Image (cartoon, rainbow, N blue to C red; front, side, top):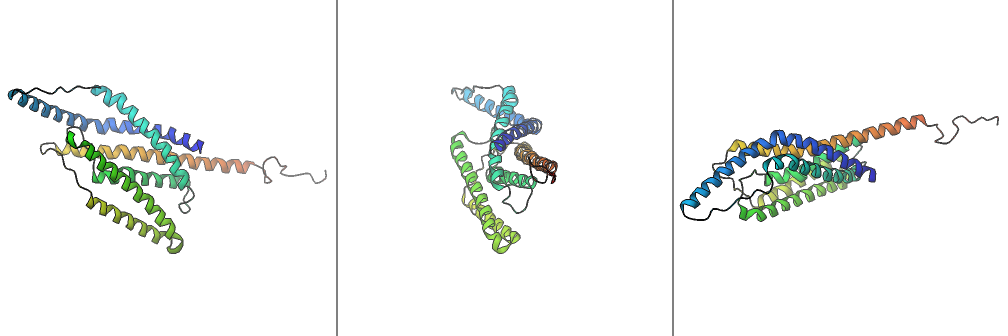
Length: 266
């Protein structure tokens, strides 16, 4: 297990570096556009406050924009990647050999896809990521609580669907059990999507293209993280099996430490 954890952390760091490249290329342009939009709004509010004789609130910047988009973004994604890699190694150890007759590579990709869907895609479909200048400061705790509630529901629903599929497979077959599990999963999600309140705090004048590009970039960052971890972890798993088979062919048929052809005349 220690080897798997170490492997997961290293692969997670590599995935974080790849995600950083994606974020710098596709994520930073819409973020900069959103910040420019926010700056114009703040300037308009400041001008209105001055005209009304009210004090203008000071906006202090703890970290510069270059730090945020450079070392800050890199550090955050690498740390998140390392954590996801460690978590993924535990999930892989639990799933490997328990999902039909899938090889480690296919198991790794399937676990990564399931993790990406349950941890990011499903919660983001209900409460998508927003760039700066979107969202009221007074509702940030409310919005954060709803998002984490949806995240917990998504993860619990995914685990429950896996358990239902495994329980039904011996009796109804893998295909039929999978259909029932997926149907139950979608039904539970549909109920919570309908019950939980929606949040729409996007200003009417905010550019729709900027919002779209930001959300696509956010999906891409998570896809690169989970996809890289799943593919790289699966490749290492397949190489390990290939190495074990190669070593097995080099050993005598009687096992290590035994004479492959004992001299009967001794």
